[in-house]
Length: 346
Image 1 (cartoon, rainbow, N blue to C red):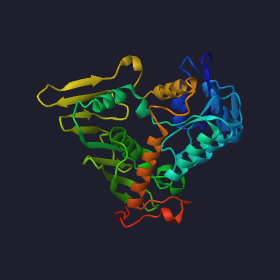
Image 2: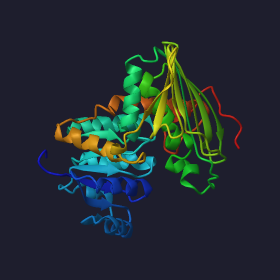
Image 3: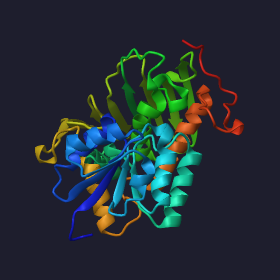
Image 4: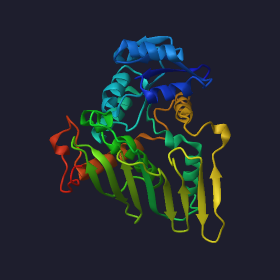
């Protein structure tokens, strides 16, 4: 594989699939060879748009295509377990969109399946592959702001989204948390790891999904993270990390930043900016490049997006849903919310 292009299959034909494919076709070491949808006409239209040679009207045909090195799963997260599992069972390597699955149990099943088949599996957490986010993490890990005391991050969209929208549909894993809240949670855990305690409250929709959620995560070190997500109001999508010896502020779009500012006691603020050579801030090419690097190295998981980190994020998302009272159809009764109810439905 080291001497030839990595051959990609695209599973699903929505907006994120189109954005990822557009970046893939610009990478000289990548080749998109097939696409699948549950509707043949959708697959055909997508294939024509991007010049893809094979279009399948069902997922299984893509999974069984032995000319594919790795499949990018871009369905709504309610279908990730089924779609990624189908591909892993057939021996394909998989890059799966976030939220990785509906819950930690499904995520554990996919990780176990990938291990049993000796296949590569990675969550498409593009933030973790962003060069400027990697620089930020390296600075924090090097102790430039001392011991991390607090992380703040938010991600909200103004909407409004009608009850018929995917984001309001429990059957499709709707709500703010899995679509948007995964970013603040993943950002906090990139810096601090899995929290020891989770507290959360939400404003719920009549359908039973969270319109907005606030979470307070805590760690045994005393560190805290204040996180917010919403599909009922647009937020600054900013983040900050406060340490014992300084602070880092990330302006709007913290998960694909143009810059961040380092504040240290007794020093002038220092701005770090994205390298124009890394491409536009919304590019998905860095996660694609990480997948291809790992495949060529014979690795079954990414060092930038390790599977245990993905599982830890899913456990935190489960805990937040447990606190606010969001349960999706088909989830086991023992996953029911406990003693901390959500706020009054909107």
